[in-house]
Image (cartoon, rainbow, N blue to C red; front, side, top):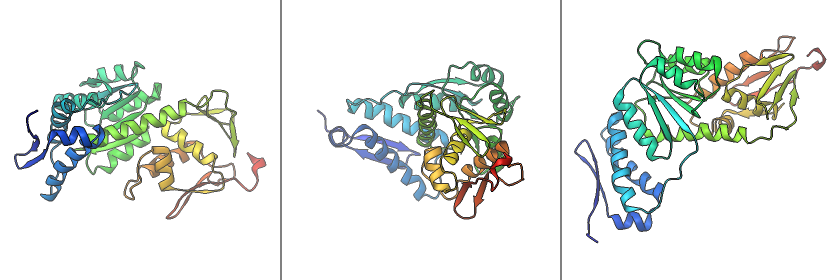
Length: 314
């Protein structure tokens, strides 16, 4: 075997070399990917800037597909489920499709709003990646049309630092968001987290007894919530949040616990998406008849599902 080296370069100056025998003998598939990406990423951050989305995707794809796959006999386990990507940028669609495909996802890409709505409502996908900035019908309107008929999880791509887009998307019913430009590894990680949450919820037995708390009836098996005779229209995240709250009645649940158990990702202090989800849930479940909130915020800690003093009024 030739004593060759593997090279991953980006922007010319970044060049990380690894002997192939070390990769195949000492690093498993996931570790090898992490080592390659980390070396390249450190170069860019040391320069005080981040690489472009195209560079991130192209370097990851070039390194992982062309080199590591040829050096390792291991395979990425496929994920049961298809992802629909709605983005008008053909290069982003192509690169994201290749990247997620290499990660074991089945991917379909759509570049127009009209076709995006049609395919999103087809029921053939387990998750939708939706760009906000689309010509014609924007991502928010597409999300509204999806939520009117479907609960398929939606991850929205927003402009970096645009809190208004992020909050609006979550309020309409998005399950998560990712700002552009994004790290493709984070995109894959967030998709996996959403699918794990959905699959975990689907595994609950359909004959599970409903939980009745504070005038709300939550049927985990059917994923239906009723307030009296009214059926509440909750997103996947909102339902999982409410289930967590009703199983923790009278106990303060920290934001960190909600992020890790409901959103199924690592908690970061500056990520306020869980607060937006809770705010939307509070609006939908409403207050008690005496005006007190069912879900109360505990400053600096998290939230608590509180029972009213007089439950007979419910």
